[in-house]
Every structure is written in C-alpha cells, then in structure tokens.
Amino acid sequence: MRTVRLLSLAVAAASLVAGCQSGASNPLGVDHQATSPLTVAPRYATVDGGQAIRLTATVELPNGSRTTPDDVRWSTADPAIAEVDRYGTVHALQAGRVQIIAEWRDSRASSLIVVAEQVRKKGDCLARLEGGATSSAASPCS
Image 1 (cartoon, rainbow, N blue to C red):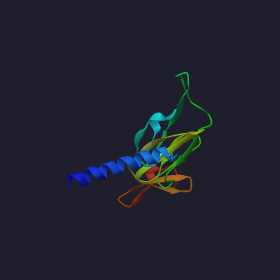
Image 2 (image 1 turned 180 degrees about the vertical axis):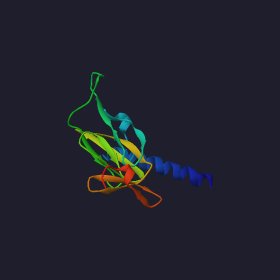
Image 3 (image 1 turned 60 degrees about the vertical axis):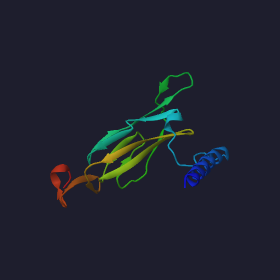
Image 4 (image 1 turned 90 degrees about the horizontal axis):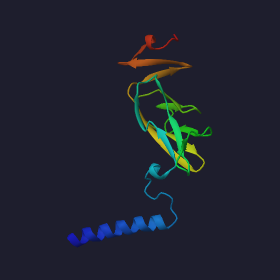
C-alpha cells in the first residue's frame, strides 16, 4: 500500500514537471499573480449590492518603481454578479463571488469581490431585494 502511494506521488510530480516543460503556460490553472508585474488592489473586498468599489492596477517596472498604466483592460468573470467599467470601478449587483480581471500587455492580475446583498437592476436604477420584496428607498428611481 505504501509503495502505491509513493508511486502515485512520483507520477503526479512527473506530470507537473512534464507539463511545465512541455511549453504549457499554466497546466494547473494556478494564478501566477506573484510573478506578474501587474497587481490589483484591493485583492479581496466585500461590497453590498448596489454599491461600487474602485480597483487600482499597478505595474512594477524593471527599475523597481511602480506606475498605474492608462491602458488596463478590465473584465468580470460573471456580469450578473458585478460589472466593471474601463476605469476599474466595480458595481455590485447580485449576491455572490466574482473575479475581476485586469490585463495589461501580457500580464494579468485579479481581485476577488464578494457581493453580500443582492439588488435588482431596473434600467439604470438599482433596488435592493429584502426578503423577496423590492425596496424603493435604496434607489432614487421609482
């Protein structure tokens, strides 16, 4: 039994090494943000539905200085939970977790946003859902 476990570990290790040496850029789907010159702050945030938070992408230059590039591309993994505009402002819509991704040149970084309370979007207006009922007090729109 011990031999089988050791053999399984050896096969798994060999697969990882082969995957990395085969030219596969990310065989396990691990976020390599630590090695990317691009970072997003905050990395994690909790936001109530209907609220917004501004994310900031910064790049570490070869000389060690940091800058905020203008041409960062922002996207959301789930637009039903949160939307993100071209400036990195995240608008929380529905309770859940969503990854917001920043891309700059060949670098990617992300932030995990947890939306704590659900809202309903009605045109350009937002209304909180409390116990299944819509509250018009949460939105200036009626």
